[in-house]
Image 1 (cartoon, rainbow, N blue to C red):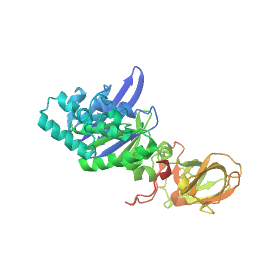
Image 2: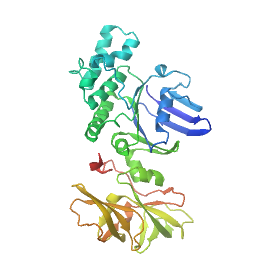
Image 3: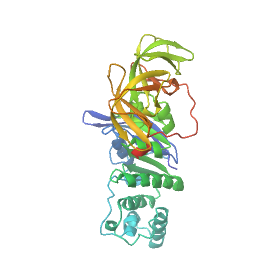
Image 4: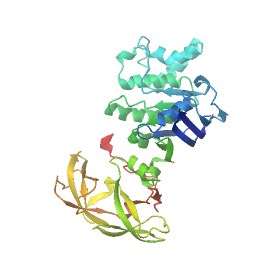
Amino acid sequence: MGQLTLSKLRKSFSNIEVIKSVDLDVKEGEFVVFVGPSGCGKSTLLRMIAGLEEATNGDIIISEKRVNDLPPVKRGIAMVFQSYALYPHMSVFENIAFPLRVEKMNEADLSTKVQEAARVLQLDTRLKQKPGTLSGGQRQRVAIGRAIVREPKIFLFDEPLSNLDAALRAEMRIELTNLHKKLGATMIYVTHDQIEAMTMADRIVVLNFGEIAQVGTPLELYHKPANTFVAAFIGNPKMNFLNVTCTGADASGVTVSLDGSGEALIPVARHDGLVGKTLTLGIRPEHVHLGNGDLTTTFTPGVIERLGIHSVAYGAVGTSGGGDFCGLFPGTAAIHDGKPATVGINAVDCHLFDEHGLALERQIELSEADPALVDPSAA
């Protein structure tokens, strides 16, 4: 069993509270990713689960047992760190076998467990080599193998791919996803990279200043972010935000006016008292297109990144030329630096946020199909 429950968990260093009453349930077999900007508390939260940091208040429950007072070795967890932390003088076999030797396991069982872990990780032909002869990805697999042989209830990963180059990170994302499918184990993974979170997680926990901003599947966070923080953090390039004025609201949605671009009915849940207020309209760069839309405006690119399959343009919208705006267009799109272009936004693609940055719920159904959630060129 590998269920995890965090109940009103807090962590303070002197008078600085870094984790603020976190409540979370992780089901057995889930791949859950903690994501957020640097300093949001994600690694501290992981270290508290592991027993490397003491909780100030609250409960950590693993497989229905409170583990706050247990040392790491008694919690049924195994942790893979950002650094491989391998013994350079030991072979791959001995590095993987090390925790079993500490437990004084008999040689036959030890060898069987190491061989099986090496087979799963495709390291069976490397067992006699030293870490110095391996690539970065292979070394990280050795570190993962050392965790696998302990047969933990929960695997904890603390930014394990951040030391790898872009190509290796992409390969290791696939390997870790496949490993999760093979083992069926509960895995909790910390990263600051939202692309890793979107491509690997069953559920994502978005943290901001020690609090959970939102928990959900990648599709839920992409299509229905709870607030402007999550909306900006999830998706690459990040969401655009424009000030709009509410001119009407009924059962079909909220009508907004964008300066110089007309009005559009945005299909979101109705809220009372919005008429006349300034709201924030969110639109993802991949939903901006050349030509007219429900809302049409002028976009003047300042910088254009030609990526082949896509052209990413950054510039200003509207006749006043104010604000930062990004559009993700086809690679052959006829856009040029400093040359104004007409761009359209469809109401169904828009998000609306109130004056506090909280989302008005979109009236859309999420399909099981997984669209291009992020710019694949950024992987």
